[in-house]
Image (cartoon, rainbow, N blue to C red; front, side):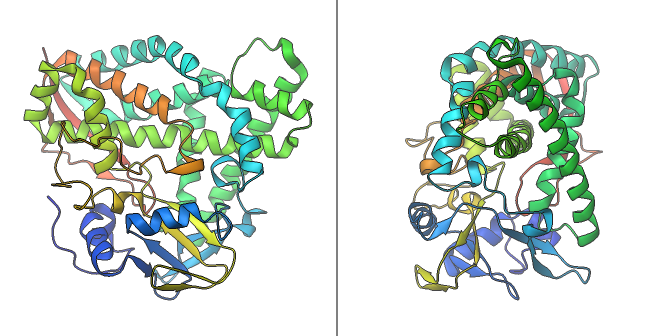
Length: 412
């Protein structure tokens, strides 16, 4: 249960660890809230979020600047031009480029291809969960939540599974750009890591280009190579798309799996209901997505002076559209802070975005979560937090992911 909001300081560690009182206060009293001293606005009201999403001509998806903490501890805007340019690939692209990027990536996440991955994901989950159960528990994040999504991302993109560890490290450092708590010196380190990831993916793309249609490795990277060969996109853009996929694909589902296990550990009655009726697990996954959106929001930039609701928005302003705040709106979700496995609108949350930028990896994320939770519940009769080692969240305004989640388990 969330405690009352103490301040509207978005960088207050209390608000980062438990952001929901702040989100409720903003949604109720300041639905379009300007972060003091910046031209960044947090949008927490569902109707105004959807208005911004629908006004593509005014609110661009290009990621041009984000919130950062300066050396004095105050919020400031970090201009992504410091990294060379704005991020304008796939999820951060506008039309007509977005449609081209999405069309090239879609074959790699078509329903049949994702369904084919279930067996491999289930085998990994069984192996890792059995290892945890044999030791009566351990860190769920290290053993399951981080590695399994990274391996699945590598498989769907067409990257070597043996590179999963370094891909995980790159992905987690990449989303630090959006954390808000990141300071200037760390931004420079992240820039170096991002350059390393880009070079790695550029090398893999070159291999796919050299292999051509005869490439033995299926995956999105081969489809992008075909797009480069056909003149649909430039090589540099193909690398940018791969950077976005490598960062978001593992990070978001890692957050989902960690959040799901924590909520199960806190709710033994939900555990029991799901063990008795496993067909409800997909509904539980939707409740986890709603309650603990792995990405709390997504940025937009205003291309011109405008208004959103009653708020004047200057040209060049950045908006953080807060999925996580809208997902707990009591007008749309009765008893919004509770798990309800029988909601009439289980998929009405915004955790995968909405409209043309709806998350292209949503099907894979749902599959991974369902399979992992099926195996976890089938293999345990007790699942609880370790009282001697409380879970810890990543200090970020953007991601809702656990750094550690020590669990205690007993086999069924």
